[in-house]
Length: 147
Image (cartoon, rainbow, N blue to C red):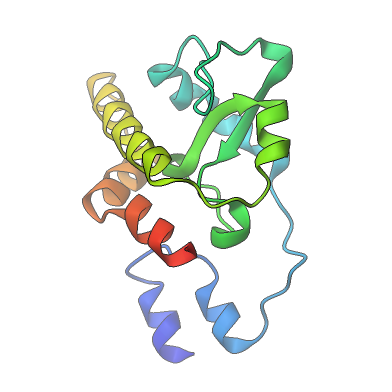
């Protein structure tokens, strides 16, 4: 348990110490509409709101934000794992683990988003988190961890 607490200082493996300690609960609340806070950044790379899964343009009333690696595996909302999808795609996807193709697409999206954010002069924790996730290969590591 102490080792997992120490590791959390160096990476963002969410709530791992709670899982090890046994205080992990299945009823951890989700952010839901709290994912809208990522729109400012997602729209930089995807201004036309194109679905990450289907490639179709999404109308505002059908727009949903999705965790590519399911939230139930990470219990964390991170820019490097959030994309636009349709509401139907989001609800039908459930907790399915993404394919390797989706993982590679997310990695590419993250690099593009990082470069756009840097070019736009965006500062703060959100770009640092994105850069850290790219440098530390978070998408691949978390995908392998949940498989």
